[in-house]
Length: 429
Ligand code: HAM
Image 1 (tube, protein in one colour):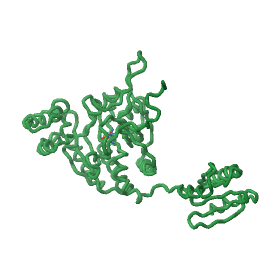
Image 2 (cartoon, helix red, strand yellow):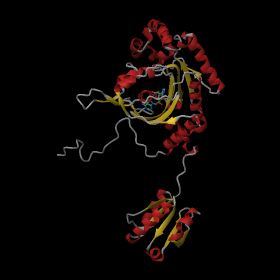
Image 3 (cartoon, rainbow, N blue to C red):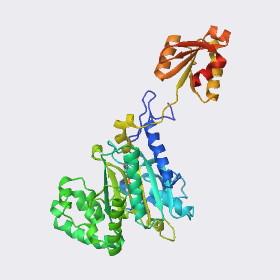
């Protein structure tokens, strides 16, 4: 019996549910590299934080009643009996950035940083929703003015529209006010929900008691209809928040961002206050939000800093963005692969020569591959064709004797025999 493996020898291993293999990263890499370029223009630095974080970090920052914390965390129990700290696979990156800001004693304010990488949430997998997914995450920590929010939204809008040429999405915004505004608003909303309790779905009845603002995330049609007439939080803002809400809209108008106010936009994480926004595209179906963000003015203190640092940030969902870009991929200026040169030794005797010639091409920054598994000339030519070779460099007995190589242009089929020492010059011509 095999004591190391519980799977039967012939069983095929499958991907873990809700994860994906990326076998062609050209689009993914294009999206990331263009984003990096854009971030340089807006003066953000790239950072990297661990995938493993203390579970408590997310409990404290995202909120104990949020779906992510109650149902979706990938928690790894401690292996050390003396150490009861539980760790988890990060479900998002904002809390990690804030931890990094506090733990590393960052003094540069505003701290404008970004990163990209995998996140993990135990959700029910479906199109655009995975258990391991990727985000590009950006934060401006220590940014009091609402002007930062408008600039961030404009930057994302430019990226999606101008760089990635998307034009069917909507920018939805809302304003959640300050803590006091929400305290004042909650009983007003509660009274409305009580009045209409007989029309609410089971989940909304539950949310009404536990995390009342989340009723607006309900997917049930009748609830959504009802909430169109619900009291709006933006009608219950204090004077300063009223001003900031107006400023956000004015700044977005100034920067020519077309947006829509969505009073039902509350976002699923508890750290948000004031500005919240999403970029949504109906063609994605039920998982239509491909980017989301907002302001979080209390999180830095909550994560352990003595001082508050009002902040704002956003995350792009890479898988959803790729779903939008896949159909227009051919129109995007993806990185062009360099021309491929395939070296074909006709027998074992020419293999060392082939290795040397490949090395020569590599030294001169040419892309070269060599076929070493001794197949027939015909099958090697077929393989080179499939690999997309621009040129084949054929080395047979005659070529070896004459220190020559036959270079075949795979586009027009033309063959030229030349001294090996001239091959690089010929190919770089
Ligand atoms: P979020 O809305 O939870 O916000 O996630 C941001 C984006 O990640 C979503 O709009 C979506 O595109 C993508 N996403 C989320 N869950 C999944 C999933 N299971 N499968 C595929 N894509 C997914 C945050 O994570 C905040 N940390 C954003 C932020 C940064 N707010 C301030 N700073």
